[in-house]
Amino acid sequence: MTGAPPPAARPLGVVVNPTAGKGRAVRAGAVVVDTLREAGHLVHDLSGRTADLALTRARRAVDAGAVRALVVVGGDGMVHLGAQAVAGTGVPLGVVAVGTGNDFAPTLGLPVGDVGASCRALLAALDAGERGVRAVDAAFVSGPGLVAGPDAVGGQGRWVAGAVSAGLDATVNARANAMRRPRGSSRYTIAAVREVVGYRPWSYRLTFDGLQPTGAHEHPGVGTAAGLHLRSDGDGTATWTGRAALVTAANGPRIGGGVLVAPHARVDDGYLDVVIGTDLSRPAAAAVFPSMFVGAHLRHRKVHLVRARAVTVEPGPDAWASGERPMPVAFGDGERLGALPLRVEARAGALHALVPAGPAAPSRAG
Image (tube, rainbow, N blue to C red; front, side, top):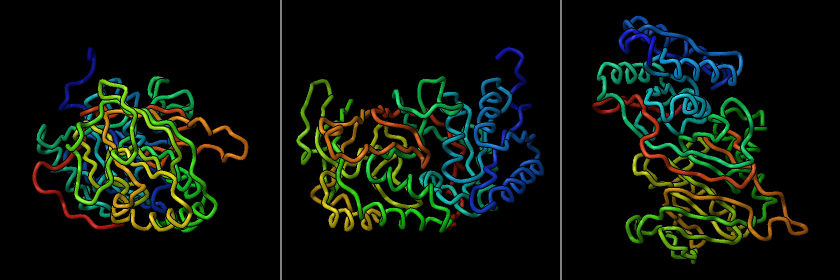
């Protein structure tokens, strides 16, 4: 870019979430900045009083070619913010995972809850140059109901690093976000118990594009698209209409602080793992949810897996009938996205992540 400093002279941008992990991110952010500077790196703190302000500053720095990498300190909400700034640009994203929900970092083998280990991994990736940058997929979400704000990419859509939730998983996410206590990951479990009590499956229409060939994605004991009776429209496109409890389009395996919603999902295969739990009764939903922590829910006869390059999730024909509950508002990376319909598309290699070239640094839950 004309006028931009050469790569070696550009600083690292750092964004810290002031509220993540009961304030742990602020303390961690200071350690990260000091550690990077002590290692000889120029650092530009792009944090703001609000997430919107921080994203605006980060995006301007990336667009101007003013930073050679962006490091976010916090949980998956900060990964989401970072993705809005760097996805599709080639500027790498570094993650120091010290939030309440840290599902993206372990997917890449990065430390969780350990600032020292995170800094070592970050420095190792930076020292490795191109070998310390891993290209992974990101989901691009578009639709008329997306929440307006600076995190909408050019007013056209949002990037999601982990998963888009559009069913019971989304209502649980909304309830968990509204709860003040407990502050840890158990909040998601408590929210799930409360949501299951009054839930009824919603009416959906799902349109899949770029289906993975039959048999290429099957795992022993895992439900597949066969039980959904998809209607093929040709050219790798198919539709399904019916009632469902769970609708998740996953780029990575985890949501909600460790829930293995899509245990076989890979962040570098160019596909989404779309998990659909059809018309589960309340007792069945109550039984299925705990099994999601170990990925065993995919063995249930009403839980199905479809791999596709894109899926459009919209209200089904009965969604507006008398007595129907409102359709869930979709969430991505634990952040509110907006109302259906939404299209979720896997963009191969859209996100570049700073990951050590050798064995990952040891991590622990936190």
